Image 1 (cartoon, helix red, strand yellow):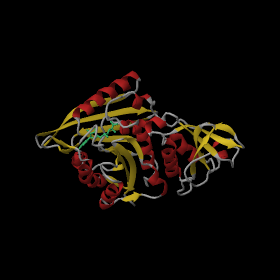
Image 2: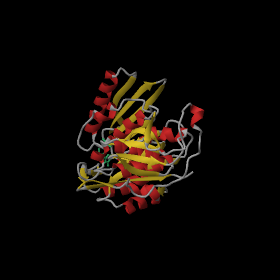
Image 3: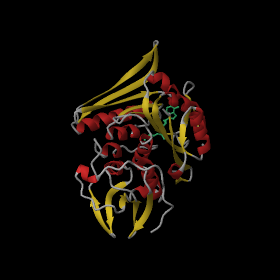
Length: 355
Ligand SMILES: C[S@@+](CC[C@H](N)C(=O)[O-])C[C@H]1O[C@@H](n2cnc3c(N)ncnc32)[C@H](O)[C@@H]1O
């Protein structure tokens, strides 16, 4: 066995497994099997990131372990309903077991996704945010939303071809976005329409021009899908994210989740009016974070991944704090940074608008 020291945050309230019909052998440790494909995404650092995600979202002690050459997370907590529901949505989970004196007994996890995984895996394009990282970012951000339970309204203000919005839909949330690259929004709209039609899902989807005071402001894509008796909505504006407040008007969001430009594949559009494009993701974040913070409901959370080689973590934390948000910065929150390649070192940060 190996692994960094255990990650600790607050404990969950205990609910007896018997109350929902599970026969568990507890109290024994639980082992979450980590999807091996993740090591491609995180360059061998998947166990550490997965442990931080679970520690943050479940509020339990988690330790990465290797058993017979395979990566697991060891969880020393009671397998209550809330813990099992949290494990079921983890970005890295492949399965869950009870460790009964060295023998692994599988525990069936609930199927949580409303839409198939191929919704997010089919699109392939340069600059796409990895689907698992997007799910991790959504999970850790949503875990910090202090609002009554229920479907959330989630904004990705740099949405590209909508990986965040699709992952939000899969989890049963409403989604909204802004993207400067009109062609990317058009390509996404075409993809989504084809996908929903092919899967024979009841839906509507249309692209419309946006005009204010006689001036053209770009386009807007709106879609709705009906699933299991409820409908999920999605809306995307083309335009500069710094205009997000104007474009979305009075609408407030429960969570803002975004993967900021790395300054490599995508430059950040620093001067959309002049059509200029610079390489400074920092300048964009300095302008945009106060705008996004103003769109967050009280009790809401903002989660972001970005390239720390262009903007250090301390600077991002400072921008979030200056915008009136409280940054989650201790314990497992400091375990998300990882190398993507020689020009991208990615980190994850979450900040909340406290009640
Ligand atoms: C890292 S990519 C996000 C990719 C997205 N998560 C996906 O999987 O498709 C950042 C996106 O921000 C967009 N962008 C950069 N500057 C922008 C601005 N000022 N306003 C709106 N979008 C911008 C880029 O065009 C790019 O699509």
